[in-house]
Image 1 (cartoon, rainbow, N blue to C red):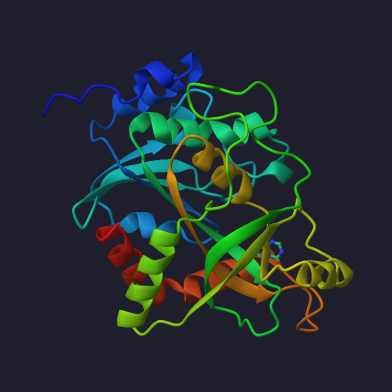
Image 2: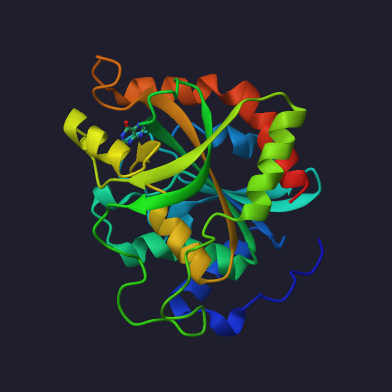
Length: 282
Ligand code: HPA
């Protein structure tokens, strides 16, 4: 077996992050440059990795674990078409009761592992009335309705600035790449603004009308804290939503988590080739 490469960014890590990074590197010596966060029902993307090492979250000190029964929780490190990647199969949410620093922790661990580019995925409700179940939406920008920010509190100056710019939170270069790959594969790709709500209750129809008026195209309960932290610590970020349902009030039907999981699965045949090619060319 080859020698593990030196710990990247070691000087920047706080001791808890460094301990988590060391625990992972004891199990997988590759230095991933690309991170993927896989949303509800999208864990199948991690199955594409070759020579994969799987590290359950419970074996990583302080790594937050989902409280939702049946939700996955492991890091998968491996290669995807020549790119060294780490996938977070399962994530935690603000509504689970975790405070913002706990949501920031996995991103700092990914950074500590060597990740420079982050691809965030999620399941989202379609707020834009033109969107249909199974649509893929490239995230152009976000609205933070969580009422909190993961960078609140003392700034970690070694990682990033006190007041990080968010004008290009979702890399334009990577959005161009998604569009090019989608066109080549003849996959229709929506584009729009993702609004993060706290949950865990789904929104009311009145809240969805409000979100539409303020410019949201999709709504979910994740992604925004991770994207803020990743931008702060210098990662290039891109995001994709799978529209798993029409948001409350738009279809006349009640919303259910089962429907969300089924629709994620429906997107698999388009999503896997699309994501693979985007990652190959990152
Ligand atoms: N609202 C919030 N979160 C979601 C939805 C929704 O309609 N669908 C999937 N995640």
